[in-house]
Structures are given as structure tokens and as C-alpha cells.
Amino acid sequence: MGLAEALSSGRFVVTGELTPPKGVDTGEMVVKAKDLAAIVDAVNVTDNPSARMQMSSLGGSAALVGAGVEPVFQLTCRDRNRIALQSELLTAWSLGIKNVLCLTGDHVMFGDHPQAASVFDLDAVQLLEAARGLNEGIDMNGNELKGSPALFAGAAAAPEAEPWEAQRIKFEKKIHAGATWFQTQAIFDFEKLDRFMTVAARHNVKVIAGLILLKSARMVEFLNAYVPGIHVPQQIVERLAGSDKPMEVGMEIAVEQVSRFKDTCDGVHMMVMGAEARVPEILERAGVKRD
Amino acid sequence: MIITKPKAKEAVLSMLEGYDKIFVLGCNSCAETIGTGGPEQVAEMSEFLAGSGKTVTGTAVIDPICHVLGAKRALREQGEAVSEADAVVVMSCGAGVQTVSEALEQAAFPALDSVFLGNVIRHGIYDERCSLCGECVLDVTGGVCPVTRCAKGLLNGPCGGMSEGKCEVDPDQDCAWALIYERLAKSGRTEKMAATMKPKDHSLHRKPVKISNR
Ligand code: SF4
Ligand code: SF4
Image (cartoon, rainbow over the protein chains, first blue to last red):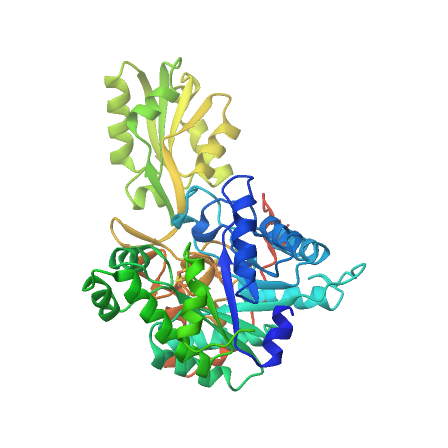
């Protein structure tokens, strides 16, 4: 079952995430993807995350398709103009990639090529509109396509960002632009999640809540300082710092989060960075049934 | 105002390798106002060049060097001081340097780096607020430019990196979209933000842009 079917079936979906290699060796990524595929509905392939240069998300997604794993092709506006973005969407579909997550992209200053030009010819809303146009058989200038895709286009949401009203307006613009499913940033504040879900409930969209498995207080400090859009509250930092088994505390937190998401959202996106083997345990302890 | 920054004096000196007689030209407009190419800086530069073994044939600070006809006339008026020089050091933005290289046979060298179109917040403090995009959208963004003041130039609202109204790129910098939202909210016009803005039409300012009203 693909991601679209899984989401519309009404069951709680689980997605994972992998980053293509910095280099040409996709072997390790494919092995991890196959392991993950046994547990999750789809695997996100990141697009030069934090603006660090890697193999493309398109290439990584194609490798997953080749291995029989359902990818979510992440596509950011940072590195490509509208010609390249549309071209990649068409290429993705022709390679058997159906799911695309349309993203703005982290600023180049976070990455390993801070001297690079930032493109942002389109923003995420405009990219969604472009994807919808392609699905309807036309490019951004109304030119007809020879064969059109049926991309399952989703977008990101930032339920915790303030001022929330500004984010809410953007969230709803993404819905109007054709996003039918959302993957959120990592969520730690359940009240803000509820605030977000109240708005989402007014629309016909699916929400996959983001989760980052926290492994240590040091990791959290790094996330808070260097990863845009992630704010781990102090009280969680203290919980991790106060334990001699921080990884197990992180597991506990993840279980609490999935338990909450299970009742309020349509799925969870697990960013576990290397701890893929522990995903089944989190799901099981949170009472998520997978068959 | 075109904001310029002085290049290191040594860098200017190394451009001038092989040139002995130098004319130093400043600009009485932007560069004078922000103190990068006015009379004082021109005097300082000629002193430095003279002290480094060059012969300074003359100096002038003329009204905007980017005004091509006016600048050509002003250079002619300098007579031998210019005609005898083998090179001109221009203390203006890049537009001014190019006026000089068009007007004279001699080489024109930039003493400044041209950085952006800036607002003078107060003397010595300049902010970029407009990047001359060719299609002004300030009418729908509460008078705050997202093309320039959002680090990504986003047109449809804040990215996920906005945090407590600050930008992901610099926590000391306001997120342009938080500013836009606040401005619009104050006047009860947030519906302006809800309308999707189309991608920019870059064909409107394809380089090099020319306008001819003749
Ligand atoms: S939208 Fe911004 S960059 Fe464009 S003309 Fe207006 S102020 Fe300048
Ligand atoms: S935080 Fe705001 S100003 Fe900074 S890049 Fe994102 S939208 Fe633009």
C-alpha cells in the first residue's frame, strides 16, 4: 500500500527518513531503507538537508524505488529555479516516485557551502501550485504536457512557530495551493499541536506529526542552536540531562509523543537518525498496531 | 542610497601596479553622504598613494558620477590633471567607475565595493530594504518588503524557521513576515496576507535592464 492509500485508509501511518550519501555509494542507504520499509509506510529522502551538499533527493528516491521501498521525495526551493523544480517533478514521476513533499528549504548559511547563491525562485506555496498544474497537464505557463503525473503533493507545517497567526495563514495557503497532507516539524508542545489540529480539522487534509528521537542533552543543545524550526523545551533538556541513560529517557519521551499523536493526528514522521532499530519498540510501547 | 565599503588600501595599491600617475575621483552623492568617497576620503586616498610612491596628478569630487553626461563634462574640465594620468581611482559605486571607463581611455579602478541600495538608519548604520525587484509589492505587505527583508525572499508568508518573530538566519533579526503580519494586523488587513502571491516575473528586470523614455 502506498502512502496515499495508507493515509486515506484511516490507519495511523508511520514514515521514516533517510539522507542520501555524500558521495555515490547508495549501498548503505538502500540497506537502511529496506530495514525501515518493514516498519514504516514510506521513507522520506531529504534534499540536501541543512544545505549540506549530498546526492540529490531525486537520485536517492529513485534508488529506493529500485529497492522496492516507497519514497517521499523532499523537494526544496533553495537550490533550483522554477524550470528545474518542474523538471524534477516530471522526472520523479517518470521514475516511479509518487509522493513529493514541497518545502522551502533551510537557508544556505547553515550548510557546507555558505557561499552558494540561494535561489528561492518559488516558495513552497508556489511550488505546490506548480505541482498541481503538472498533475492537471500544464506547466506554470500553461503549456500542455505530453503525459502528466499524478503526484501526491504534501507540505510542511510548523505548529509551534510564533507568531502563530502568520503561520496559520501560510498553512491555509498551502492547502489552497493543493497540499492534501502535511508533515510537521518536530513537536514538543501538545497545546500548540492542538491549536494546529483545530485549524487542520477545518480542512480535508491529513497530518503526519514530526518526531525527533532525542538521544542526549548535548544533542538537544545542538538542535536548539543550529537546526531551524526546532525548539526543545528546557524541561525536556533537564529530563535528559538528569539521567545517566539519556537514550532511554529519549525513548520514553518518544513513546509519550507517539501516544499523543496516535489520538490526534493521522500519522507520525520519525526522525531517529541512525536509531532505526528502535522504531518498532517506540511504536509498540505507544500502542500503535502495525500489521 | 547606494551603500559602498572601502576596499583595503593595499588592494587598491596592487591594482595600480605599473601605473604611476594617478587621478583620484570621488562622488558627491551617495559615497559622499555615507563617507566612502567624499572630499575627506579622496584626500586620504591621494595622501596614501603619494606616500606609496605614486604621483597624484589631481583630485576631484564631482556630482553623481553615475550621471554619464555630467560626469564626462566634469572630467573634461579637469584638463591636464586627468589627461596626464595613466589611471583613475574612482571612489564611488560600480556605476560611477563604469562612467569613467566609458569616458576616458585610461584605466578606471574601483576603490570601493558596492554592496546594496540602503536606507541610512543613522550615520554609519545602513539597512537593505529594497532590492529593486522591478515589481513592487509593498501595497499588499504592509509596507515591509519580503523580497529584501526575508532572508529567502519568500512571497507567501513565513518559513518554518521563524521563531518568536525572529529569522532563522539571525536571531537578532526580525522575520520579515512577522513584521508584515504585525503591520497588517494593526490595521485589520491580514486578509492581504491570505491571497497567494504569484512568483516574481524575472523577465521584468533581465540584466542589463534599460529604460528609454525617449
Ligand atoms: S517589492 Fe521590495 S524589492 Fe521590489 S521594488 Fe518593492 S521594496 Fe523594492
Ligand atoms: S524566518 Fe522569516 S525572514 Fe527568515 S527566512 Fe524565514 S520567512 Fe524569511
